[in-house]
Image 1: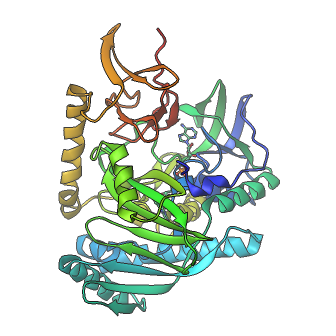
Image 2 (image 1 turned 180 degrees about the vertical axis):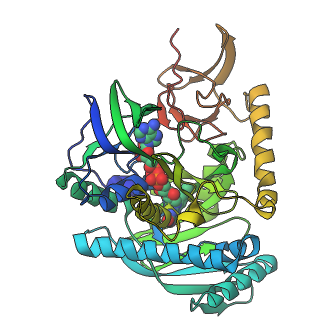
Image 3 (image 1 turned 90 degrees about the vertical axis):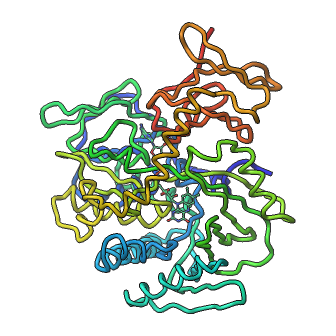
Length: 476
Ligand SMILES: Cc1cc2nc3c(=O)[nH]c(=O)nc-3n(C[C@H](O)[C@H](O)[C@H](O)COP(=O)(O)OP(=O)(O)OC[C@H]3O[C@@H](n4cnc5c(N)ncnc54)[C@H](O)[C@@H]3O)c2cc1C
């Protein structure tokens, strides 16, 4: 069993450059996931000096741990948008997702990208009366929006499906975009972390490792922003974590499935593997991550995972992403509600238009300044309450009953945590540099996780994933 995503078997064979000089650019894209690389691709033919930087390696963030479905059937999103907003908004969101799938197909065909793209049917299904009722409503809304659906009715389940959706290998796609962008003289700097952004006169001064990048326009495409952004984004979003495994399966069914039952399950096929996602929870809950992994393995029962991993994505209060302008020449795209393959792609088209001062029909739909109505806020209260409760509990009681070989102490006025393993002793500062939350130890992956905003650190405190900009290593 490999504790890594199946997609990470695919290696990037292209050159890896790290920034070692100051730069002056027209456009700086921070983050080389599906959002950043798709945007670089969209801008490749403009006469602009473009630079993409990534704290890690191209595509190795959240994008490398997705299930890689390209679908507009996304749970009961359309009835939710209809209920909380309007039929017009439901329709616009549907169009954005269909356009994104079409765009990915076009890019793959035009650039002859070999990324295991496959047309598949997408199924939504439910097994309880309450959820079946909700699913039937979703079908009615989709039909109203002009989507033809096919039903399957069983004794204890109900399902419907559409056939114009797809799956692909996300990393093969991203590496192909990298190759095209490099050919077009777009500079891509990996292992280059941005830690500060300041607007000085008309230029953004960005601290990148030990160098400075001066940029006319900056795009934050780094999943969760590493600086506090206006318009209360941190409290209008929440991180959801899920567990995924891939195991050998003789048949490739050319179908993908998602349940809308209380515990979401999602399946797809890739070559000789079946990929299963389950056990989703907001990150401040279900803190015993090892147990969550074991539950997934037990749930699947007779199959033993060849690959197993987890992933987290940003969920927004009103189920729509935040894509657009923060201020002046600063832009952001985030909050994809676990549908970033399509939303990251549509974000690249929207941001291209905004950067070039052109109108875009989705600008208002995804604007970060949009008002959130009371109905949406009500639905999110539980998450806000859970987050706050977990923050306080973790501060007061860092030592969990299920921890083995983990101890806590205060030294030099710092809260320290030590893990003992076969190599020896590993001490870290038990405080996330981002917003000072206490961390939890994930015994399955041997990493420290922030249960507030999903920063991750290795056993010795090296930051693996933001929004934290700093390590939490402790030297005696
Ligand atoms: C369990 C799960 C399953 C999913 N399955 C699907 C699916 O089937 N279909 C679908 O459409 N979506 C799916 N998603 C959603 C999708 O994976 C994400 O929304 C999408 O990958 C986010 O892409 P991104 O480019 O915004 O972020 P990322 O891929 O995380 O890219 C951001 C990059 O920014 C870099 N970065 C961060 N901070 C800095 C910094 N300070 N300086 C420089 N670089 C920085 C990171 O290293 C990273 O490479 C799933 C999500 C989850 C959690």
